[in-house]
Length: 554
Picture 1 (spheres, rainbow, N blue to C red):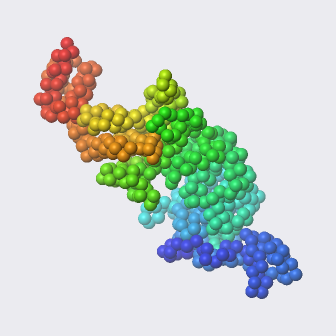
Picture 2 (cartoon, rainbow, N blue to C red):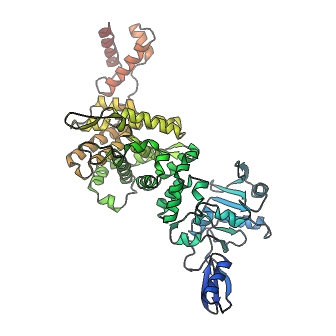
């Protein structure tokens, strides 16, 4: 029976045979399998002289399928074959509720979807080109949407459909009228219980190469282990990734960057040979050496920057793990910047497009912040390696990659701004002095809201440069610079970042009998900068500065 939504979650795993076919001789279980035939074969092998009784061990505690499932059971007769399939079954077995339900039927999926929409008072949409899908969108009382997708069986029968899916844990189905009886030809339930991610076939990744990225994301997010055969199949299919649309690659890549341990995921992508087909510019960073205080080559430094940024953000948003709490460096970050944890988290997690927040883009900026170094490498007579103006080249490269990934104009512009300006906090910190009000104003004039991103990235960059060799005094100076910048943005914006206008262009043209032109904009900007620097406080002071500038220019 279908589990009540209000009951506690469970995964039905208290019975080791739940969801499987078992063979009994008397009171003894002599065989088991994912299908009746497998259980029979196991029984014959174990007790070939005895006749075994074959039965299905149901998921006695029920599955978390939700009230809409009960409505579908009432809507369709038992003669109608409607199967819940894929991720929704997996989630139900894990005791998780799912708002996206995929169904497969022998035929007439679009007709069945329309019927469902009409009966349940939902919206109907027709999707897909090669494989048509009927989508039903239901709005629940709490305003949340429930999506039901109906598709015809792919292949000659349901088992063929299941065997053609991505991973065994997603290749499980159930008849809506027999929810306790799993259809599991590939042993997905066992893999689910043992947290093993296994591809359905050698063709899983060649049929759809983006599954390579999905596998890595799922393995890291859910802490599943990939078996060696699956890894081999992934490696063999990586050269097919360029054939996948940029939008699909982007979506999976950004889900990876938005998930836990993005640096680990990127290393795994690289280890399997996939990263060079997704972000090809990064390949040339490998083994590009750097002079001290750098302790890593450019490639490892870039990965370390992503990893350190992850720790910085975790420390500030309170999602850190125990080792982060004990990290003295992160303790310093929390101590000095903790007062801004809420606005920082809101800024990083703000929605940029309906599908994406800013967080994954910030990790992408961290990964690409030094991507221009190989093109700007030079060496002094004393052997010191330099990368003069590498930030400008890096900004050009990430702009090209962002456009190739079909990112929005807002994302492209902000990524370029972050990478182009990532050296600014370093230039402040190395003076050993706090930035002046004028330099803070110029900093945010160049970066805008992205100035907060640059400040956070600079901490991660510093930690990745020095590693364990970082002097504590430098750490304190650097974080103090970042604090000064964050304080200006979050608490002193009217004073130091964007002070209210004291005069406008009409005032300047009237008082000084000027004609419209570039000079007006230059005067207004000079007044605003002086105002942010604390040198001009009222309209009289603004006009006096304008008069002085006009006289000096004549």
